[in-house]
Amino acid sequence: MSGSRPAAVMILAAGEGRRMKSRTPKVLHSLCGRSMLGHALAASRELDPERLVVVVGHGRDEVSAEVGRQAPEARVVVQEQQLGTGHAVRMVTEALGVLDGTVVVTYADMPLLRGETLRELTFRHRAAGNAVTVLTAQGDPAGYGRIVRDAAGEFQRIVEEGDATPAELAIDEYNSGCYAFDGALLADAIKRVTTDNTQNQEYLTDVVEIVRRDGHPIGTMLAADAAEIQGINDRVQLAAARRALNDRILDRLMRDGVTINDPATTWVDVTVTIGQDAEIGPQTQLQGKTAIGSGARVGPGCLLEDTTIGDDAVVLNAVCRQAEIGPGATVGPFAYLRPGARVERGAHVGTYVELKNSVIGAGAKVPHLTYVGDAHIGERSNIGAGTIFANYDGVAKHHTTVGHDAFIGSDTVLVAPLTVGDGAYTAAGSAITEDVPPGALGIARGRQHNSGGWVERNRAGTRSAQAAAAATRARAQAQHAHTDDPAE
Ligand code: UD1
Ligand code: CA
View 1 (tube, rainbow, N blue to C red):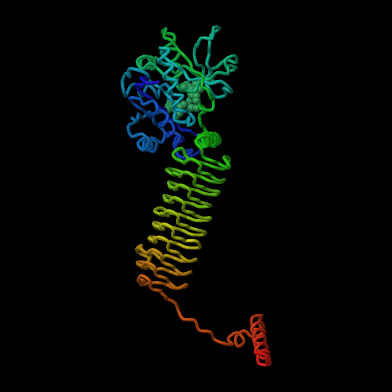
View 2: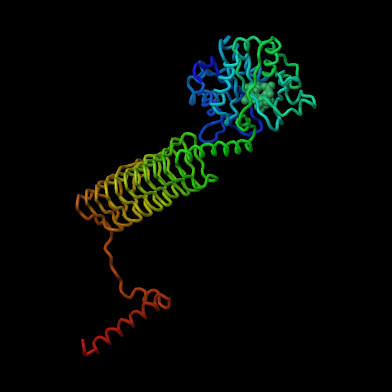
């Protein structure tokens, strides 16, 4: 389909979308990691048009900002009042002048429409030498404009539901709202559209009839999948479209060699990449720029956002945001990796562990109940259960370095800024506030003192006192037996 670069693609996005019942403009609601408008822009970009134009009206500042983020090359045209689809297109032809070549019109609220379908529409339009080619669908036509044909099956016109006769209402071929136009004929016909209809609007659909009456050839293309042209009007339809788009993404991944154990509870954004032989467990959401290496196992129960997972890594029940997990590393169950967390090759981060802006060196282990913030842990070091990297003094954040092959005893508090040297140890329960040199044992805790008989004196009559008394008796008896035994 080369050589079919259209002169322009126009995306209509000025409508209010009242049925969403939302403060957010309809076309900014998102599915699978992209706004509806973002999906429309992505599909339109596949045509590589000379100009990409978005008509905005309701929520124009927010909508224009999204256009700027998703397609900075696109031109925004404001439609002050929403006086109909024809009026919207007229605003563009008035702003940009006559566009020679093929002009494609589509909507911002059809997120399932594939770029491929638009490409085929453009191709067929060119190949047939049509003045207009209408993308149609067949099925339940409720709410859509009907495609009226003559006895010979030739296209006559599009009639809106509110303007249709009972016979026309019974037609099951309907208008998608996507068209390929000859730009010059469109610019001329759009000026001749009237508001003579039940909605008192300028209908873009009328352009098709005007061009036909002028004697130009009109074509239609039946969409292979009617679901693609489903417009989203409310959040029920949005959820259904999200499900459908997610299924499409999962199908593609499975065909590319990814195992998805439970497609019904796995949600993957369009922007995510997953390598061959990776296995995705149930209840998992993969979002944004997440990239998963081949042979990795992710899930059940993972939420990954903009996170990189190396080959053969294993991640269970974890929430990871802007984190990096190296090849062969293991994370979870129940870990929270915040931005800047990097777990290097073969390292292990275990249960109830939170990492932030920290590096866990290759082969190091942080197995249980630990917070690591603003730290660098060297290769093969072991961080004992319950260790806290105290990085915040109430005003500023400070950094901790733990060397390689170090051993941090359980329940250590490492008060930053701090350096624990290579091969150093800390004693369990220490609050370490000063550097520990390489190979030293840092101990920072009170010495243990046992106050004998304290329970008997202070807790007389309790179960503890009874247990203590029994233990004392047993010990005395054992000693007695020992001294009585001549054989020893
Ligand atoms: C339109 C078509 C109908 C088709 C249906 C497909 C017309 C007259 N009717 O009907 O034949 O079956 O789409 O979904 O074209 N918009 C603007 N400015 C406006 C009006 C609309 O930008 O002044 C945008 C809306 O934001 C929306 C799109 O155009 O993205 C369609 O508008 P909508 O009012 O939903 O058209 P329908 O009545 O559904
Ligand atoms: Ca609509």
